[in-house]
Length: 446
Image (cartoon, rainbow, N blue to C red; front, side):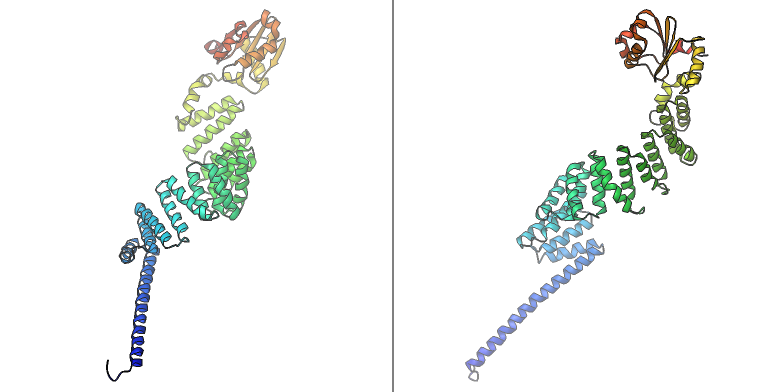
């Protein structure tokens, strides 16, 4: 010991040295922390600006000195995700989750699980994705973002019932969440719960703007749900809101016509068709002609329907079942006088049928939807008035109209261009009639 130093001086110098050492250690720790924080800040900034390659390189460099840092692993995963390397991203998110658990940081885990689930969803590994979403919901049952992610995944995989359950929870938490309410309405629709679908979608559509990217989808689902619950006018009104959109105008027009066909609103169908027939594309024109023809045919306007179908075939002869229709009813187009037989105009038919049967008078006329019966002395004539074969139900009706004594003792001539269905052969009336069909029927046309 230096003779000039006392023990007190030595102790003082020792504590000074120790203090300097402690400060140095603290400074080193602070420096490393600041360096790490600065590095992580740089990585985060690079990720936010989309410079994922540089972010990955910097994060990997920093990881060498911090192999167990879950934040570093999380940033590496984000960088890989930005580079669309989803396998590596999922791997590092999972490693970040394990590291976070080791660090007793449970707050970070739900965020990581959400990320992993979203990645698996992108990779179409739906079972794995749902598993991670459920891990989040186990911890936070009201996590709105995860509720939507799980619901949309279940919807995409057609598990509509489970999707509906999660969405009902979500809209209770966030009743104004447009996407959740829309997906709930769509889920109800696919579960055939059309009234519930409309109840979710109708107020939603009323609040949405036409410019909303989900507006068209919402209106389409709403209109179909309304039509399926026979609220046809409301369905048409909903679709009409889209008619100003030139991009989808023709698609909307066809949907409106389809609703009108369901409602048997023949007049409005014809009005729509006539108004727009000459301003739409050929493909839409074919569809309008086809649907208008179908509505007319269903209403008993057989020849008007055939003429529209024939016009449609000049544009696209292979549209839907047009080839089969025109082949089946070629005989009607080739024999326009058949219009007198198939006409809805009873005066026209009654005037013509006398000439058709070469009769001047009739003792009785029985009028049914599918056929008329003209009775004269000891003979009864049954004239089929529809463009398809008579059925056993028709024969049963004829037997009731003519009564058993007439069937047993009188001649019954049945005129049906398309004959009878094969099942009619088992009906007792079949053995009592003289059937005039096909070419023999056409010979009577005058």
